[in-house]
Length: 162
Image 1 (cartoon, one colour):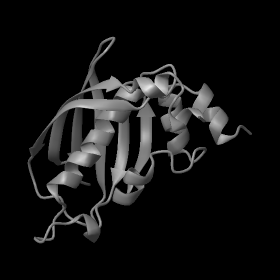
Image 2 (cartoon, rainbow, N blue to C red):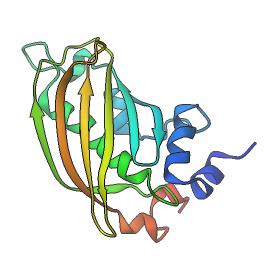
Image 3 (cartoon, one colour):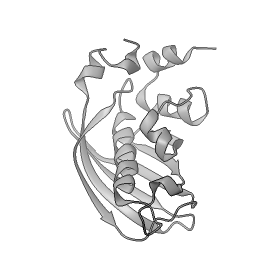
Image 4 (spheres, rainbow, N blue to C red):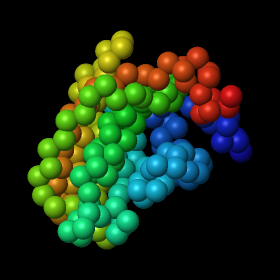
């Protein structure tokens, strides 16, 4: 069986996200995603689905998920969707992120957060993001553009074992 570092170095972006989903790579999304409770559910080139159940620590004084955390999980989804297209996983830098908050996001409810690539260019990838509740109702959506983090492409980032 391969070590996690070997998987990071050899799998494509989509394959690496699938390895996170099936447990071959533990805690691959990092500390921020762990803090907000995101997990990879499924991935394919150009699309990622994350699971997210907001907890009380993510809520505003009104008792619902704070908009900043909603933006964060959508940002993660679109960035991972863009990274899923790579020959190797390369984290993305967000160039812009536009959020539409459509309905209340409640604590304790399991949501799906989907990121989908709508245009992939050499330097910029445009994506759409969506958060849906257990009934499939859209509660928030996003459009975003990302670009690869060149430090990781050169092997300077921690994900490449440096």
